Amino acid sequence: MQKNQALAQTEMQLEQAKSQLDMQKMQQEAELKKELMQLEFQMNMQLKQMEVEALKGKEKEKEDRKDKRIKMEGTQQSEMIEQRKKDTGSKNFESAGFDNLGGFGLEQFEPR
Image 1 (spheres, rainbow, N blue to C red):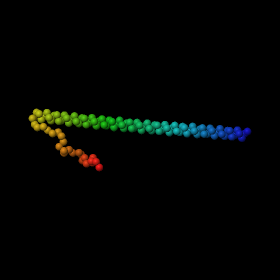
Image 2 (cartoon, rainbow, N blue to C red; image 1 turned 90 degrees about the horizontal axis):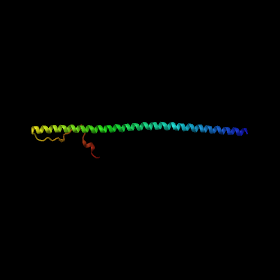
Image 3 (tube, rainbow, N blue to C red; image 1 turned 120 degrees about the vertical axis):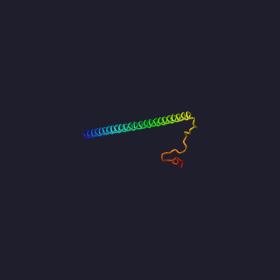
Image 4 (cartoon, rainbow, N blue to C red; image 1 turned 30 degrees about the horizontal axis):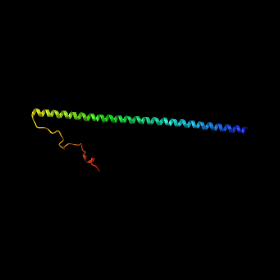
């Protein structure tokens, strides 16, 4: 009888130990998932911020090009008004082919 009680008690202690081990395992998994979710959130936030910055840069570039076109148009109109006043011939505003590309040529864009 004592042997059965000792065996039952040992089995109960074993089950309690297994239960505690399972509980610790679940807590560790929950903690790891929490950390992983936090990391994923941070990375998503950084990605979104980079997308927003790229969009802002694109819009700024668009506006800068528009401003440049408007300025060029104003300059051309001023010169045309000046030509009418002086009754001179027309001026060609197009490139004469001597544009400086700042040290690089278009050959690097040729298909290979």
